[in-house]
Length: 214
Image 1 (cartoon, helix red, strand yellow):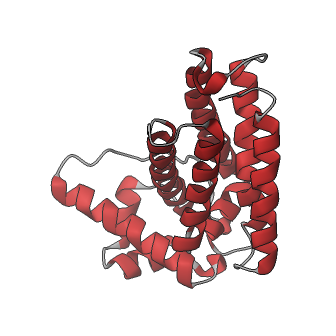
Image 2 (cartoon, helix red, strand yellow; image 1 turned 90 degrees about the vertical axis):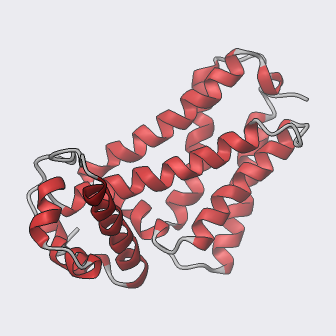
């Protein structure tokens, strides 16, 4: 990366302190919302802590009180958005309305597509997770989290799991699941995006069909 933001020295991605008062928590929410808005509307190269502070209408010093650099803000925003996606996946997997694993698989893929379609900040944010060395671990941790959730299901024999190591299969499934995000993270919506989504959906279904049954 050659952006102005990348010129910051990344010493840590962790918050400096946890907000104790509601006012402070509200300020962090504004900072994350401002970052999301900027990612959706401007080039990543122009996003700095000063730009985020201006968009959020807060002093730059208040951002540095909680976040050591702009990448720490990206990390927290990504974790927030991924947690929302994972919650939707869990709702689908545990919804009795879907009676077969193939139905659940399709609904999970559609939930991912909905996130990408409805949140214009998600693609550039995911692209940052891929292209910034210090942020790659955050993406890897997100994949490990959803894999652990799936493995826990499959260790109980849910979804008709058979003939495999639950965690190994879950880790590979998570990688296939996010391959669509990886391939389209730097692109705008296009016919090519639709084709890649269809291919990723088929690839994951065929992989899982070796281990799941209704």
